[in-house]
Length: 478
Image 1 (cartoon, rainbow, N blue to C red):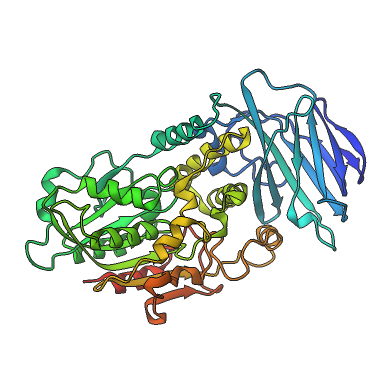
Image 2 (image 1 turned 45 degrees about the vertical axis):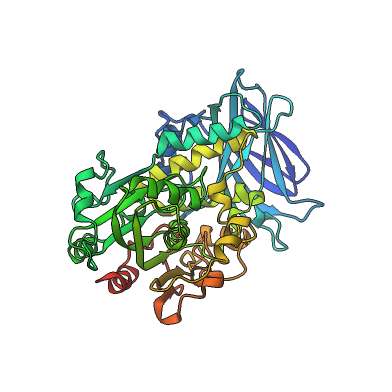
């Protein structure tokens, strides 16, 4: 371990050096783990959350075993933000890119996880900073810095869009699937068979089907697998077994294209009545479905009627994290949410897609992603959706959350410094924004559940606790 003061440059082990700007503390190079899957349990052994290491391996991010532990004793205001520069002695081999992950760690676990691309300076360097360092009272704590290597095909211009498409198509695909009590939380291989449609049509009556729409980076089983088994079983009974889900692209296509693809999967001539349960961005897809179903033309001989729509954490008024200038913060927050607060196989699968995007972002070849910018509060898509006229017969319900990590946790301290929202939020979406439908109105107070900090959940956990699940069941029960 070597001590450093603000303005000093020191060696860290045999492979790198550190230059401090406004930061005082110590640094050490950790011995390479026995295996890439190593994960410790204490600050001295801590490498990374297992969800993160599993997702990184699946996404093609190779752990280079070049971990450093920084113990920051104090920070001071500088002309810019306090930060450290970690410079490598040896350049990566041709064709390899590198990115550093910085994780705040403490006795109570992890804080924010942030990504820092390698800069092409000398053999390569990483600028590591924390917004919490730029405070009048300074900052003290421990930071783990890991380095990952990855390969990425050379892209430029519109080829970058093709790269983004290949990333999503490799992980996700368009399809409708049946959701059964035994399999709603798992990735089933079979699509909805053609023979199922005869059981879904209204048959001239009010027979309804429950359609489930997942959010960004997710799929149906990762988004809704947290529903308690008894809650889903009751929904399945209430809808006579007519529960289906739509898996779709959330990065390269906006909700309007999602709905066009959904309509294309429905047999021409079908007469269907849907109630819709949504998570996050899936709520925008539901609103788009309402709009297109009410329009003349485009449906062929299909007839679609939408009854109830339930939003859970939907950015109906947008989220500033969808702004293209905040894409890095979105990737940081999603990484933290899924790796630190998520856990389990569903979080690992969703996180894998997030880390697939970290690669082109770190390589500087990230394309525009219409599926994400559709959630931009100032974007053209959300403005157009908000200008849509109300459709008679459709009722809306909403669940939002004002989430804060418990106590004085390291994560709470990091989030307080990494201020993005001015009011309550679930870490991704403003709490009250779930009720704002633009010109279509506002979800009535009596039809909304905004969870206060005592009961609040983060963005990926709406379906895992009894209170929101019970309210959703109450709204949807035919």
